[in-house]
Length: 373
Image (tube, rainbow, N blue to C red; front, side, top):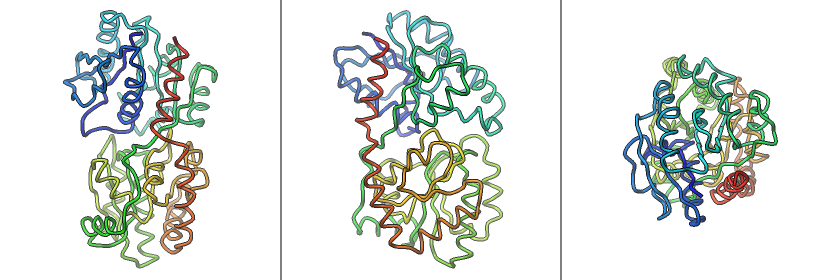
């Protein structure tokens, strides 16, 4: 079969959540199924690193799709032409977008549909595009994949599709994430926090990641404990961040917060593995891969008690109300003060993490793809 894949988010050194999902699944699937041809469709010059095997054929078509007007052109004009040219049997789109202008069988991956619940978190034109086209994409899709049971139920409720047409394929963390030696931990603390312990947040800095309340909670934590603990924020700005900027300006202990920007997986592994705990408290997630990455590094987790996060974390995390600064602060104090609690969460995390892996993700994804043969 000729399988075309939307790989426009495979960007060297710039992989985010959807890009990593694409990487982890398609690198394995293309190698494991040499009997099929895979056409990777990029919207800009590609990195040869992403041509995983000899049965992968890269195709570049414009325009570079990073704006709703260009989304429309790329998916409704460029994609149908290339699918016809290569005579594709199937089109896979891991980023939630499809083409309504082709009759080729299509599989779409919706990682979440937070834009249906919190539309004001998005710029107006992006919000309008998602809310108008996503239900049409869901209806058009021959099959839908999502990354949690929560998202599966949410999609079926919000869009005109049956639960029977949706498959759950959990995310898996990159194999690079693993525990560190005590020496490695000391080295990373010396590099980033002058040797002090720290909490860590990892994620794109957009409103739903709830960084504003995390900053307020950390400020309250510092006030109550008088500790020298610091907070490292790993991630880049995405969409509006006014509430985060305001919260930061109003902090008493703002000098104890370190904004590190994006980090390579290698450096991120060292940061995760050296942290006192992950403080990942969004108010909406389709999965929440930092939870599993931290568990793989042997790091305790604080996360939210809403959407998919309790499902992903199981009993291996402290769950908080993401809308309550006090709830987040209380969990930080518990983690800081209770060594036995940290050890217990690490032990449970070591069990929970085995539910998720890149191999399991790729296997389940391929099972969904096979249903369309």
